Image (cartoon, rainbow, N blue to C red; front, side, top):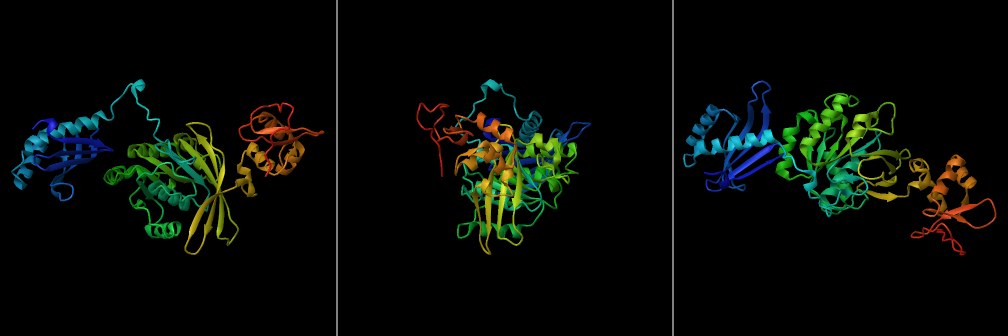
Length: 427
């Protein structure tokens, strides 16, 4: 047979070949190259029949470049089914698989790359990128796992279970390194209410080792289930060592890259309470495309929780504005909605000074001194902020000194009023 007589794919470390004429298929995974001899071995699985009724004929580890290994495998398979030219098939496919493994992804001229401008770059704005790793990090008790599950359900179904609109729905898996399936199932039911439960793929990972030791296993699950996005809970338990160490962070991201999916990673702050970087580490901060710091506010015994989310890093465009989510925990129902961050005193500090001024001016004009007093901020900082935003966000109110400031109506950008009263938005 010629190479054109069969289908071949190599994706996420798994090679698949199918010969319709013989109604057989082969898969190769768990590749390993010997450092000294450079021999490449892989686990080979041989099937007959279509996907719906296929039966396994043989499964073994095969040295792809060894003539004797291929001959022995062909002899065994011929004994199982002598209607197939196994020697010819194995000779053909072994080198094709070996070449694909060694070649890796093909290089391209960057100028020739076709950019699909219609494809969304985010799955949930402004929180999750579609193809890149995003880290949500915070102290224990900041509802990271609950939010992570709600995000997984949202991405899977396209429904805003996390209180944020979904740009696109993707087949999603929840990689759980720290808990069990049953509590997540109860939480899913509470988040869904009477709605049909979304088919999020739950992958228990806690007993299988760090992420770097599970790459081949997860590649197979992602390949077989057509997964496009994962939520990983949590990073610390998926590490092959102390997460603060540079080598551990690099090992983690190298393993994550091999999965070739978009990812939301749930992480913690370090013991020092660093709120700017996951684990207080430059390597975690630099390796993610976006990082978000989560800070919760909840009264003791209250069924309500407010969560401030602050964008600490964004590689693709400016940082997003801070915002807040409100959690309502009822006996059998959990809801997550967006809420006004400025209205939560314990969390309002997550807003930039500009956004805090904007929130205050929604109700009435104020002087710089009045703003500084209410914000408990430096008056020079407040003055510099409103002057920089004059004509785009803020506007001077005509009248006696001291000058009062208001909010400019949306769409109005002139610095002068042309002899007319300025457009001021008041609640």
